[in-house]
View (cartoon, rainbow, N blue to C red):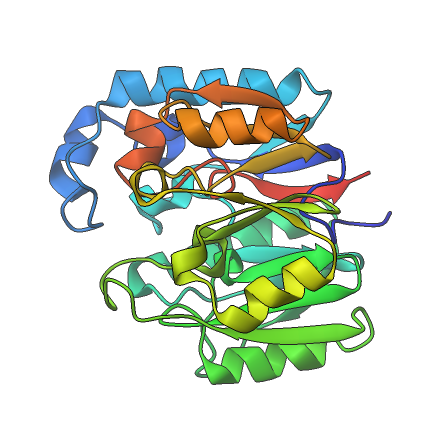
Amino acid sequence: MRYSSSMYTPLTQVIMKRPIDAFQSQQHLLENWETFNYLREPHFEEACKEFSELVEIIEQQGTKVHYLPSSDTVGLDSIYAHDPVKFTPAGALILKSGKKLRQPEAQVFKKFLSDKGIPIVGELTGDAVSDAGDIVWLDDRTLLVGRGYRTNDEAIRQLREMTADLVDEFIVVQLPHDQGEAECLHLMSFISVVDKDLAVVHSPLMPVFLRQLLLERGFQLVEVSKEEYDTLGCNVLALAPRVCVLTEENAYTIKQLRDAGATVHVYKGQEISLLGTGGPTCLTCPVVRG
């Protein structure tokens, strides 16, 4: 089986984690939301409803959803299933989060993949830290890796080594300080690739070379405003080329996507997305894309 090396081809298998297994209960949220730097305490029952709405959208495309189990060793952020691993055509790379509270998630994920017989290509070791949110397939032979507070130089060295036979271009993208080390800025915070020639971006955070690279390669750019960047308008999950999902608050971004010929699905993401700053790309770990 060829695993995922795209951000936009048809999503056939994905890994997610239910709120009941990540948030557990209202009491658990009360006790932990500040520790994990959420904007406020999420409402548990509403979170479950929002998650079900998102899953329904994904399943309507014919995508098979696998669910991570509950675990006492991980916290609220484990609902954001994208970050502990990154898939390549040959299988999974096991990462280690730059957020220490999230580091135990990788080993839970590793066991889950092993139990399902999904091959593991490599695993970060030593001082290397990286989140999958910093790793973007621009096309199936070009890998972008963000160097920021969540992904360090040692991780980039190891990732380059582990993917040497899988990519033609390994491009390091220096990320800005933005709001600082305590806040999460990933490469995927300001770019979502939704077709071979369409990307959703927040240009004020983009390095000039990256924006120029996209334009040189023929990408049309959907520009997200500061207001809609703050409501995760730049966090767009492609279920297939130009078939997109994002949170419902982002009217102008949605209009631009539709003007570009995209089919756009929206979900209410107040509790599961906005409060923990994790949109639909964060809530999903693509395993196989057709």
